[in-house]
Image (cartoon, rainbow, N blue to C red; front, top):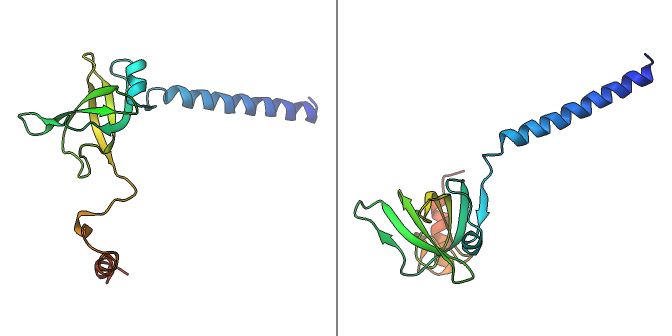
Length: 153
């Protein structure tokens, strides 16, 4: 076989190996993908029951209800429309989780239509101020921040 044909065979084998590796990676990760839904998208075309997804929106005012066990919380997530998705979460709530704040819930849709969250990520707006610095002026907050970083170098 000529050298030209040997190179051609090697290039074809390399391309087949690359395509095969890509297909193998895609096949192995098919169940690991987490799709993101807004409340209006979930209401219109809900995912399959038990499929791992993320639901993002705003916590509806007046919808947070804590169960008798003290760790299970039911609330509603709304979006830009009137659609609201009921969510149930069992665990410790993030500090920033309050009504009318942004939230991303990771979990799956239950057979009863309630989104069962396994993890909650509370979002804050661009004007976030830590609890320790609330009510302070800019200069005073900068002084406190400078005092807390002394000795960290």
